[in-house]
Amino acid sequence: MRILSEAYFPELPNYYRGKVRENYDLPDGRRIIISTDRLSAFDRILACIPYKGQVLTQTARYWFDATKDICPNHVLDYPDPNVVVGQRLDILPVEIVVRGYLAGTTGTSILTLYKKGQRTMYGITLPDGMRDNQELPEPIITPTSKAFDGGHDEPLTATEIVENGLLTKPQWETLSQYALRLFARGQELASKRGLILVDTKYEFGIDKSGAIILADEIHTPDSSRYWITDSYHESFQKGERPRSFDKDFVRSWVAERCDPYRDDIPEIPTKLIEETSAVYIKAFEAITGLRFEPDNREATPLERVRRNLTPFFSGR
View (cartoon, rainbow, N blue to C red):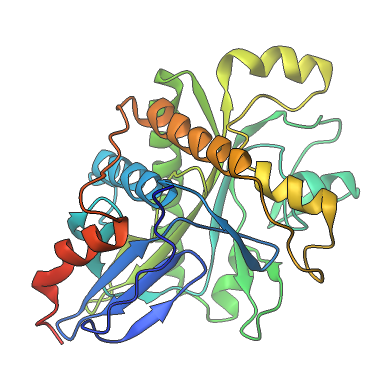
């Protein structure tokens, strides 16, 4: 299988390895971000999924292009299907999640909190009597702040964000307007493709002038939840989860066979990895309406990325 498991190039400066992406900061203020095929879950790398990195980069590219009239983004160039070159930004310390439905499984999701009896969360009050996966009266922002010691995300209100000095009031107003407009555009275009954009995560930074810039990725299968529109109403009436791009085959398979936080990960079947790759590709085509064209130039993806990044090697 053609996979990009890592992308370390000693010819590039200021290397930083994330769970999925490799990063290099150039002296001129640009950042090279390479999406590998690594699949991260349970705070560890489980496997590599062929073409996952290309799918994420190209899906984000589609959305960055489709939303650049709403707010500025960090993109400068795409020298390779797995690579974006962007502005280096100071990332704001607030994670923005916009939600259009009462859904989610994490401890900070509004469905989890709602089932615990909470009606006021993130500074917003939801009505009684709502059901799982019900559409909200209007999309809401549910911001969180990640602890600096690697702890859990903590729910925040707009007032807390400003009073704690995480953002200024003008920054929060600009950021929240951007997020809601981006989400509205996402839902609009997704509906034309027979999809529902349920919720999504945004990351913003500021450039040297202090302008707020959209960073990282946007509306990808990893940062967003999509449902298939045709399945939604029937599933909702039955109290079932609507159909989605179920790419968590590997995660579920591992969790059924061990404690993924403590035990060694068993060998994952090749067929399971291939099925997950197919789901990512299907998601790309459904979300963008474009045909996925795997870039199989060079003997390996790593050699292809190296060739395409060679012009940057002198930029130390």
